[in-house]
Image 1 (tube, rainbow, N blue to C red):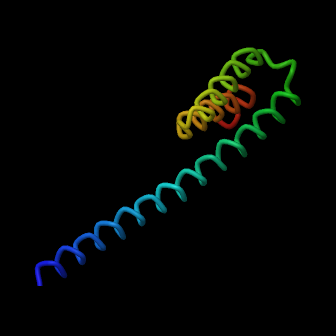
Image 2: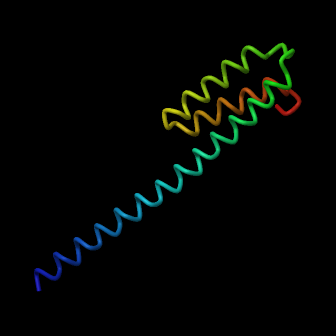
Image 3: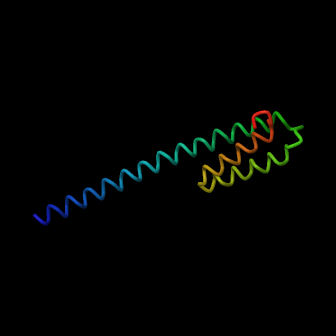
Length: 93
């Protein structure tokens, strides 16, 4: 009886760990996708607004976004990309 409880407990722990790993992977992929999409939007906006007074600051924010995304800090990366887009289009602020 004790052996069955141990096996049952071990199975429960394994299933909880597997669920947590799967959830983390799904969340990570969504955030990585957000980084990629935001990065593309910023590149397009930079190409279209090379005469902007805020261009060099937007490039700096783009670089920060890329660095954070490449390091796995997806939310911070997306935040910097959003800042770059705001700098290039102040009407959206």
